Each structure stands twice: as C-alpha cells, then as structure tokens.
Amino acid sequence: MPRFFMPKEEIAPDSFTLSKENAAHLRVLRLKNGDAVTVCDGAGTDYECLIEDGNSGRLSVTCVSPSKSEPQVFASVYMAFAKSDKFEHVIQKATELGASEVVCFPSSRCVSRPDERSLKAKLDRWSKIAASAAGQSGRGVIPQIIALPSYAAALARAASAALAVCFYENEKSLTYCAAISQKPFRTASILTGPEGGFSEEEIRQAAAAGLQICTLGRRILRCETAPLCALSALMYATGEF
Image (cartoon, rainbow, N blue to C red; front, side, top):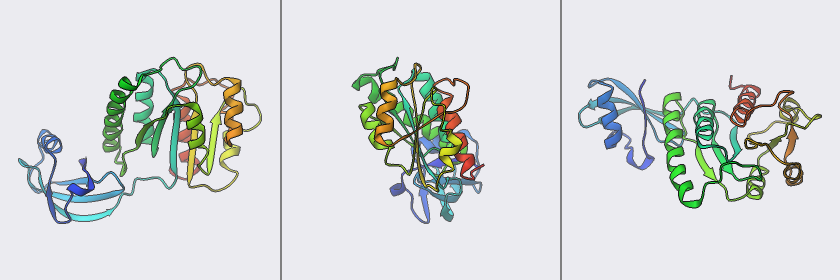
C-alpha cells in the first residue's frame, strides 16, 4: 500500500489534504478515488485512508493505529565521518533495518571532515534519504540524522544507552554476541570507525566512557559494512527477524 509521511499537526482525525509534494506523488502513482493509502505522522502512528479526490490529494481517514513496523529496541547507529556516498548508503540501509537514529561524528582518522556550512547541506540531504527509505520500507518513524561536534560528544551520548558497544578490529576477547546476551536492554548504541578505523587512544577513551569494546569477527569490515552488520545482528538478537 502506498505510504506517505506528514507532520502530525497537518493530519486531521476525519479527513485532510496531502501536502503539495505528496499530492503530486499520489498523481504520479495514478491512484484512483476510493483507493487505500497509508499516511504516517513519522512518530509511530499510521492513518489508513481512502482517496476522496486524487487531484487535490484529499483523503478520508478510516483507521488510526500504532505503526506495527517499529522495533522494540531503540537502536542508535554511531558512525565516524566517512565519504559522503558511504554514509548515505548506511543511512538508507540502517533505516530499512530499523535504526531509530544515525549519528555521525569526527575521529582522528576521518578522511571526510565537512565544515559547518557543508554539513548543514549534507544533513538536509541525509534527512531526505532517511525519509525516503522509511517510506519505502514501511517504517512508522523517520530516523533522526544527527551530527556531533567531537568524538568525546559521541562517546558521552552513546554511553547513555543500556547496551553501548564500540567495535575494534584488534579486540580478541569480547564478542558482540557475548555483549548482546549479557542482559536485557531497550536502548542500544553501536559505534564504528571511519575508513582508517579507531586509534588505540580512541579505544581507550571509549572504554573509559563506559562502552564495551567488541570484535565483529576475524575479518576486517569496511566502514560502511560494519554498522549494518552490527545493526542486523542486533535486530536478529532482539527478535526482529
């Protein structure tokens, strides 16, 4: 069923009109009066609707219910700045997999270091990618895309989750599987490095901040592969698959 996102304040309980952009998309889909569509407020509520007038985008509400596609765990993906196309790929796929937010931050080995002006433009583009992926995958929430000013800020924020892990290719003892199975949790932070990985000092800082340092296995994963691998394993472990 076609799915559209609109701000909650623009959705009325009985009938309402889609935004100009959504109404144009409705016409592109060649939907007819009486066809069913879903409108989501982006905060976890779905509105099942029938098209009253396809030209104007006028809809009538038939049912309101919580979105059924949202995971039980609030999963935050923390990824050090990477080349733009890699980060965009992670945003799209992490949204499909069920991430609640995707957070980027600088670290010592980052190749990409966007300045304030370019970062603002990137955030706008990244938010649109997340919204598009959320609609395509039937999400009830559009993940927030956040940029933090420092590695220290990322550690402090990530450490507040019930499960907070940082992945390091030289870790030999603690597996991700063991970290996930230690205790129940409803919030999780998974933190991965840039193309060059984390330095030893950064790993010490992560451990001092309270993150568990884990291995993702014996193979070295690319910076765009590691967060998606970790998120997939998290969703599997929490029963989402």
